[in-house]
Image 1 (cartoon, chains in turn orange, red):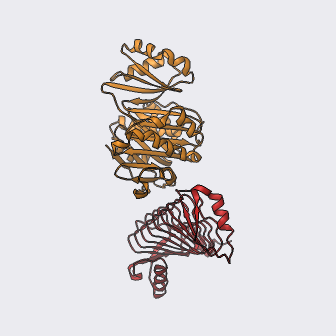
Image 2: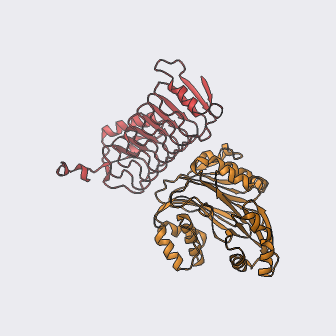
Image 3: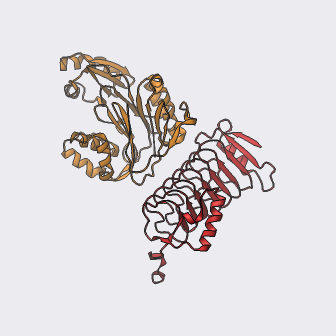
Amino acid sequence: MCGIVGLFLKDKALEPQLGGLLTDMLITMTDRGPDSAGIAIYGEATSGRSKFTVQSDAADTVFETLAEQLSSEIGAPVGLRRKDTHAVLDFPEGKADDLRDALARVAPDVRVMSTGESIEIYKEVGLPKDVAARFDISSMSGSHGIGHTRMATESAVTTMGAHPFNTGADQCLVHNGSLSNHNSLRRKLLREGVRIETQNDTEVGAAYLTWKMREGASLGEALESSLKDLDGFFTFVVGTEDGFGVVRDPIACKPAVMAETDQYVAFGSEYRALVNLPGIEDARVWEPEPATVYFWKH
Amino acid sequence: MQTFDLAAEGLRTLNSTLHAQAEQTNQTAWDVINPRGSHAIAVGLDAPIEVHVKGSTGYYCAGMNKQATVHVHGSAGPGVAENMMSGTVIVEGDASQYAGATGRGGTLVIKGNASSRCGISMKGIDIIVHGNIGHMSAFMAQSGNLVVCGDAGDALGDSLYEARLFVRGSVKSLGADCIEKEMRPEHLEILANLLERGGCDARPEEFKRYGSARELYNFKPDNAY
């Protein structure tokens, strides 16, 4: 089991409430996944700047000097905004590869949670309410976001095993289910030079999408082909810079409910997650079809 | 009329209150307000009472029902009326996967659509769906009737035993050993009764009947021990 929530706002007036609404949805899904939780929020991008969300188990010491070290390594100003065990690094666009190399040199234990212009991913082990509080998710604004509560089945309960997984710049994936061919697929993707850091099945799913898109597929095409190449159970929700998508495997035993109004499109593993959304009483509520790719864009 | 606020009083209190209603209760009508997608609402009832759930429900609403009428004024999550024994369950909206699974008796009416595995392993329940049903419905269904006024998804009636399936619209594909069968007068009569009980605006003549070809392993006398 696991819980997924997602919220894609059509009405800009709701943007300041995005973090609050998603936090409430996430906490409702605690009994589907009390092991760990994570959330991806798409906020305002700053023109000409990119950002990494990074995590450290020794945040007190490491984050103290990290911005300074990275600035001198890449020869450009790097900003650092700390949030508990995570920090958002911002830097001039086009420097992402340099920054990743520099991180590996000066702080090899720091993990990269997300890369892009608008995405920030926060995830940790613990109850969803505690994870959300650590990062003060409820105060965050944004245009869309995805959250996940994890009940681990395929790999250890660790920060890196928590969802969402960053699949590329401003892209992320969350998963409810279990993949059965992740070991063979991981070997194949590693041979293709795709970065995979854990034994987690979902990370392989995320890496698969990254690889497909690197080979020229659109996100929609990558999701379509996942229906053929991934074996196992999955309800996936993916986030991109300007939208979010949903796909379920053909058996579709992992639950999914969607709701749409003039103000938003929402996803929940269960209807319970949606009951506090504004205007839910009059929303169009439906269950997404199996083996069908859904996508919403701004 | 008794009104029960689920958000205020909680699920265990609701179900134990409803379980306490005996055969001769005079508290026969209940409104459950603020269901908010909760699981296991009105499960295991065994009294001739009528429960109106004013909103949508989560997993396993009205499971194992006996005698009672449970009316969901919203949509129902997975496993609504699972293993129902008798009585009636009505869902005004849609029902999620495995609605009426393993049901042994009673009537389940879904006024919207039902998703995958509707009536899986049904054993005597009558399920009447006003809309469409999803894939693998009536898988290994043993007895009872499944009526679908809309369309059926893939693999309808796979490995079917003796349940009767009536579909008005299209069937995306039939499962192993499920075939279309002749609609004889006795079937039209059964179907007319089911459509009336389900409050369906449809005529029996518009439906096709599907059932077991009785060709799988279990139907071969030579395979008996």
